[in-house]
Image (cartoon, rainbow, N blue to C red; front, side, top):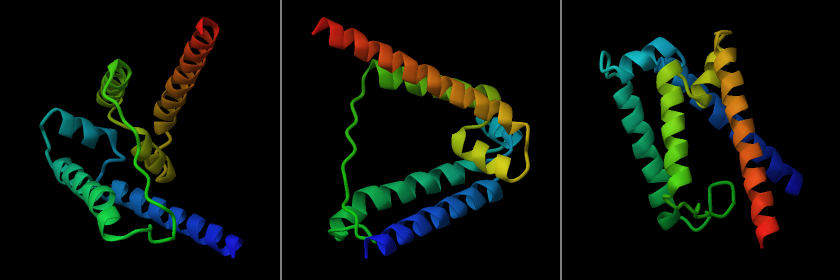
Length: 149
């Protein structure tokens, strides 16, 4: 029984990711020039994509847990803790700057790579390098805190 549940979880993940990738490709978010045109207010078509994503997320993460006790595949709904602090703000600013400089963020970069845009390997390498540096920084902060206490 557990094996079937895991299979359906993996199948649902694959289907969701595929739908997400096709949506990004169809909306042209996998093309950095489209994103940069949006960010410079030359083409506001991606505003519809952004609005749809925010609306769907509000529906799924806010309304669905009030309607249903359990998720569709039987899992439980969990609240994700979030605190607005210096690290969150700095991370958001750095992410936004990177997105604005290269016109791509992680999801569309992976989808664009799948669509054959090899130039996005540079963006992905930078994303992984930044994530790796963040991991090293957090480890260092945790070691410092452990030595202090």
